[in-house]
Amino acid sequence: MAKAAKKRPGAWTRDDVKQLKRLYRNMRTADVASKMGRSVGSVQSKATSFGLTKTKKYLKSIGRG
Image: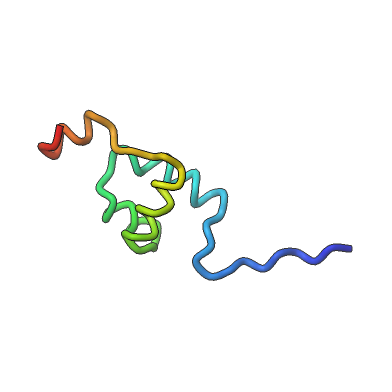
């Protein structure tokens, strides 16, 4: 019987990735990080690895679009 893999501290679970994909496009990165209990850099890095970007509507709402 195979051993269950141990979760590394800070490892991203499938649920974490789903939450990131749901929140990232329309929320400040710092707020996403706080809500997920992760650093801003960690959230930015993971979002970049999935090709996530902020929506045009969100960018316009903060004066960047």
